[in-house]
Length: 448
Image 1 (spheres, rainbow, N blue to C red):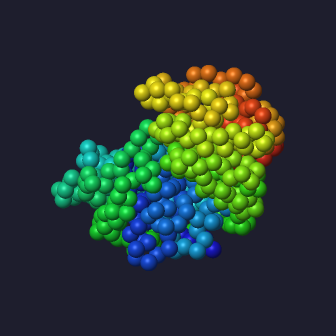
Image 2 (cartoon, rainbow, N blue to C red):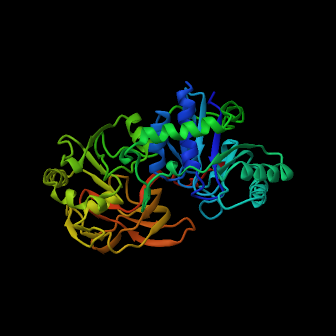
Image 3 (cartoon, rainbow, N blue to C red):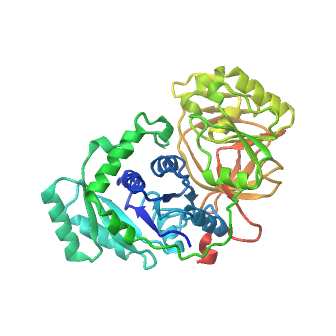
């Protein structure tokens, strides 16, 4: 049986749910509990913080982009061999694609998991109770079992908040966490600065654990957790077929956005993953039969990548041998001819796709995508449909040649051709998450 689980959610982004989740994971881990976790939605950055806090891999669960089978198996794996699973929500509790798909609430409802609501009360008094009461009643199939008030200004503020909550609902206030500016995580244009780049991550995790251990009754919190209401469906989640049997994968600060579930699924299907670092001027393995350049922050490292001659020569040699090469978002930019950094300086890239991109000319692109491949390539054959997510500020200055896919957004609106393919090389700004089974809707609503 899977371990009991809780979801840490909030009314809005910026409420402190990431810091509180990390503090809970580390506090429970240092008490000797084995704690699993998951992150709702297509976020790449938070799962790495979870993994550091709990010392276990953290998958993403996305009810818009993933098939029901994928979701169920990932939840099963998150709860295997642990005492408790803590999930962290995405944005506000009910925020997602049109209709609510992809929201934290949908994951909670699908798996029958209780929710602890983190509310930022820094600029609120008794009005916090009205806000919380609305969240308690909004959906009958989403059960908020406790509230954590974050950013409390002192003892009088805490008393006012607790009295207002007690007057209006029975759901318990589990803790009033004081304001602590030392627990602010640094961020940049795509979210938090990556866990691997945090200068004092262990000290931060320990401070966060000290705070929640001092203010939260951890035993009470654990008793609120419940096992998933979905029965296990198998042994392993395999969202995507491997790109090859020996896959060279770019892995460093410029190429960090690869979903753990995708990589684990490739390994379970027999693929061997060969990580290499373009920033260290490493080339993909000579015997690799596929190369994967995931997203990340190449715009912050464009000068170093332009000078990484061994990396670029190795990548071009692989393309010359007909090795399938896939670039997603940042990886796609590096496969192009040039990349302009934030200052407008143009840096030569691999030149394997007739694409020029710029981070100086910023335009945010954000949202779910369903794509239909327009040719055979590393991700499948012509006409295959996949779901994923797009989030970037870079702009395509030019793109010629055959498009990679045709895309639609979460409302089903046609976005036209996206990406580019040339020979064995292909890419786009879309981060692919899962495949779509022909003739079937990919979302979990079919099984709700």
